[in-house]
Figure 1 (cartoon, rainbow, N blue to C red):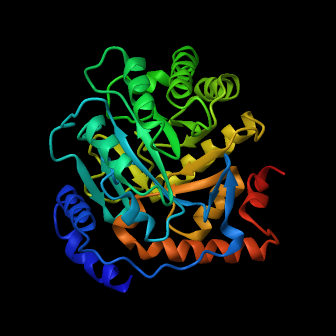
Figure 2: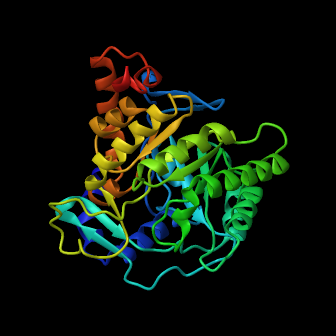
Length: 352
């Protein structure tokens, strides 16, 4: 892990997207050495949806859009990895540059626009992996597809037999009109359609299906999402994606770039929305917490706000993969300090 941390200044000297592409190539080639496997503390294990997660720390979608390196990332100690977002047809995404570091803020702005190699390549990679470790599949729609539901149905139908859980991403700010799908009517229609597609693809023992929603939600949006989550039969929510807001005090020179902001400045907003949706659903549906996690204390705050599992990505840009091990150790210590024998005991603790 020290080797990776030492390499960070060299990687960050490259343009942001070039550095990301290089990292994927190194992982895919096997040139990036795998760390020694370590057993996680028993207190970190999470039993959810009939699956045992060795720890609650996951890699968020966006790092590995094409499912090129899920198993390589699992070896860094993640409890689960989410690959995507993938669209039915390959697409180039928005024009470069489209990824910007804000190092002073420990943040990133991106406007990728679902760039990926398409569903065929993605599904082939998932089909070829050994199915050791939990890997989720995150699906979206092509930019020029007028029938959004058709794209999501196609994605879920294709990946449902291949993934350990499924995510319907309706919250990226970089595909025009996508976030309109978070309103009650469109979201319920979409949820009903993708659940039916999942049932057709995997009639027995189907993987859980989650909706990924934005942190930029009005009161009405939150009501709509809570209603659909409980009414439709989806298995969970992910809160949230990047934000189009710009919290005061951002210092990075690229803070004015258009796109979604992730990293430390997103933590407070995303955690507040997570807690609000937990209350609105009375804790009846599992929530994955994402946005701004960079320490065990951050992960613990998400869990206490109502997250059964958490995800990170941006912090890796600044801390390297050794961060995963540190977060797990810190989280285990915080659980023990407060008398929680396991993660599940702490979920929603701030509301009790």
